[in-house]
Image (tube, rainbow, N blue to C red; front, top):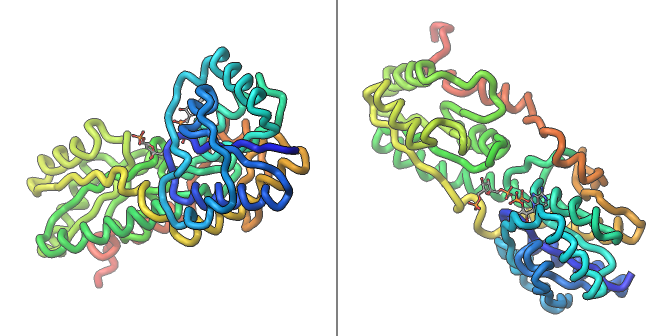
Length: 334
Ligand SMILES: Nc1ncnc2c1ncn2[C@@H]1O[C@H](COP(=O)(O)OP(=O)(O)O)[C@@H](O)[C@H]1O
Ligand SMILES: O=P(O)(O)OC[C@H]1O[C@](O)(COP(=O)(O)O)[C@@H](O)[C@@H]1O
């Protein structure tokens, strides 16, 4: 084992830099060189490689984003493009590849492994936290912190002005970020893709009216996962404003959830997974994800991570539903 390559792919996630540092420094101790390809899979195909030395890694862990750059590169689904990547890796003398990314990146890693006989390892890095087989992905914890910090700020102005806000959080098709943010921010309502049936417009409107009756001067916050309601957060806010005759303000949080410095938890997770990825390669693993489950580093077949839906923790869903709005909906006479 002489040379290992690393890419960051798909949506960047805070902590990716700390992960690369752990990979580089661990490999260095084993006498292995690390090369990074910029811009994810596109960088492999286009030969955008750069050697990475531990001296360059001294100050990267605290930075968000990814210094290696990331990209969405749908062309990588094509066999001829994956073959080009395999040829480039061979031409560069790469013995193994580490892909830090989400489910799409892991599909890409698996696709590449059909045309490249060397080892391929995935490390989960996605704020959506939607990969099966790992309790957490790099970036999720920071994204929750980012979302909650922003929601707390909205809460203050909403409370001051007695306003209703519909706040849209990211997650693509997964509700992990929405669920954690809703609990931490003590939201009055939560709409997530995994909840079936979804609350009806009528139920939501009734709930807002009840809250307004009990707390005429108070705020009310709905957490809505993206890609859910027709017309998104603006559509829901408009529908609810019409149904309640109370102005409901839409607020998409957007990319501020994904940017910013990684919190300590993400840096520690990233460091553990980066080091473990090198150990996994040295022990011969391939087409596996190095994840974290039940407080331990685990190896999971990469195909399992994206072929099964990862469920939300039902106890957390129940927790939020049992507590949200209890002060204006409970009928215990107090
Ligand atoms: N089915 C696939 N086959 C090959 N490559 C894929 C596939 N799906 C995604 N990829 C590659 O992985 C990249 C990242 O995937 P994407 O879904 O955008 O982000 P993430 O990895 O964060 O889920 C894509 O832009 C593409 O280059
Ligand atoms: O930044 P983009 O390309 O608009 O993508 C937005 C999407 O990326 C994410 O922030 C992260 O998703 P991935 O980690 O799967 O790439 C999603 O929550 C969101 O839907």
